[in-house]
Image (tube, rainbow, N blue to C red; front, side):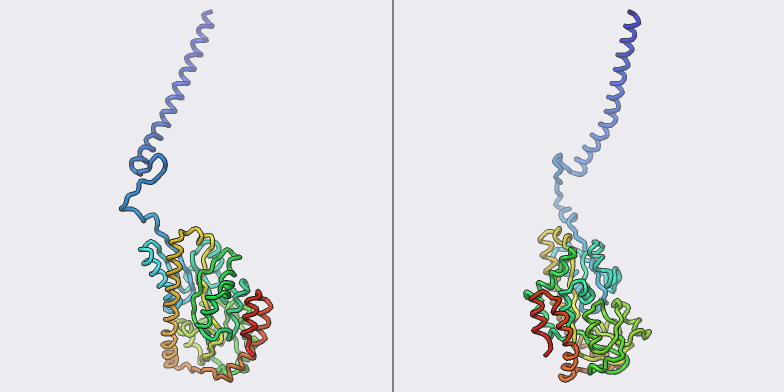
Length: 368
């Protein structure tokens, strides 16, 4: 009997000890947690429902939006200055809340790698040369056809209409969105072999070109050979004699000093060089509507500013390049017609790859 009583007492005491231990442990955990919650409520001004107690003096700090924009041309080109203008206007229109960091001269990504970087989310905005991506987005091959646009006003009329919508939609299959097109201008020819005035003058020339089979084809039809290479490799390729010719806009020829390793410039206005401003579509849709409106307005203003710059800088570039000793030639009407007839077969080759509206446009613009 005593043994049973002793056993009962000992067992009961043990249970009580375990309860005391558990209570002590719970207190050890709960007291610090209670203190932490109290401090968060008091210092962080978080109410039990999780809503922030707003401090008017701090409003807006959490809403700063920083975007990174990459391009590959120099800052003193129309596109380089348009990018800086865009960044400034985005900041002004948002009251300093939207910040755009611009990386020129391929400092962030080359013109070959920037599109994949945008798809990965490694950069927020790019403005690549459309010609580098015409084999990926075949609709853009229309933009590479020589002599298809009379001038930049004609081009803008197309881009702002239904055909422009088709062109802008092309990158959507990669999850990208075209916000608008910026321009570099119309392309000219430079070489260090001889003046290029007639199609036969292209024979034996080796051109650096962009990653465009359409460009490769029209230079081939004119009689030249080509080497595809990134934009920032153009000068060393010319300097070392790997290529002896190139095509570009006047502002790029001037700003990158291509004219210093060339002897002749032909003012041909034969092709368009443009820059679609692209964003990742998923990123764009996550932005508040007000931010999207601000960015679009800033981009549109920057595009208009760029067009003004093109006209101003081209005149200055021509004057300074001529003063340096570069021989400058302008195509006559007969010479231009000869070029157009030489490249006319390309219109048929491109037209068959286009959706019906673009096909009709290409066929209507084919040189006769």
